[in-house]
Image 1 (cartoon, rainbow, N blue to C red):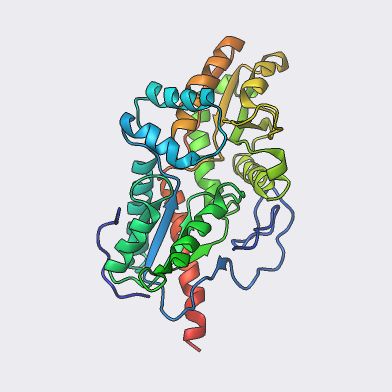
Image 2: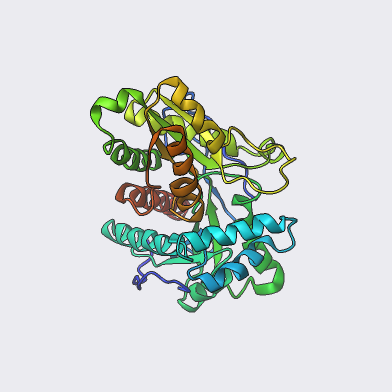
Length: 365
């Protein structure tokens, strides 16, 4: 382990697809077949392995923190993508309705602080840095801060459990862009953990959040309560080329089995783009009204596709889906994402600790 002291969490401060189903680097999971024999490693090792790991790099999407940053943020995200003006203005309005800011950045910082503390309790004293794709601190800023701190090799964790072409792999591409620009000697090496949708403690932490939501519904109505998991929809053509949808389904089954749920389903949310393009369905707002005819009285929405509350949870579910339920005569409760739940923080620490231990094995021979 690194003996380097751990400062306060710093804010500037092409991997193979993970198998869907039950093949997990973390052991057998409910919701899938028995795991295959454990592979030798579960990380995209981009470094030359010349140095021991001396920091952790958490990577997230980023979000605006004040209303005047919303349009620059959206322009940065889109960068020439053909999004209709109506959709663009609708998203701006979503931010206006929720107060002009998203809690994602704050929650990511809290995840980083929690991870640093959990690692320290285990005797792993590493600094934890945060970098965002589309907001400050940008990933390059974080990489530079890591270098200034004397760090040479990082365990990189993309704060998305699932692998999709439009999102997960873009984080690796961003790091590669920095290297391609000639900064290889000016930033630390980063090894990326593989998608962790099937980590047991990810399921346990989301199950804990879901149970808290279920407890808000009177016990006598649980028999007519339905849990609806949600995740961001993507075009079906994209879904056919990546394991995203299967990984989401696996995670839903794992959480359902943690709680012994039988009355649950998966719906998709937050689709955008050309309405003629097929996306994963059913859309949550089209799905919810039909539940009343099935005898459902209460709905618990569990946004399992996200790990932090942000605009697509707070507007699309807390406001839009809630209004859909009210119109259909359904009571709706929304489960929190894992955010900085202690069990989720333990999951992050487990992944870091496991990776460091595996890296040390050859050195100790």
